[in-house]
Length: 120
Ligand SMILES: [Zn+2]
Image (cartoon, rainbow, N blue to C red; front, top):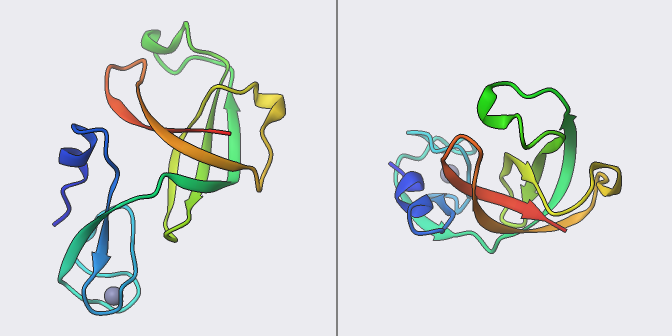
């Protein structure tokens, strides 16, 4: 299985890559979604991707997020292929668009977890 959370602890996004077909995927699964293979190795993501969808959150879902609204949650397609749901930061929501190129860095989220986020 993947070491996704171990990678997060080191500010690294580690993608499971199938030993049979070479496809990277996220989230980690016991079988490759392309070929059903069960052996993987980890590959560090380049951190480059493209916004494929996004939504602006204007109402805090819990008290931890009160000081963060509005913020943007988006789908980013990594250049390695998988898509991930993530925060899009350091840019006003009105400036974000589908197809925008973004790069990853790690940040402490309002709930206290350290996770990959993306910015233009
Ligand atoms: Zn595969």
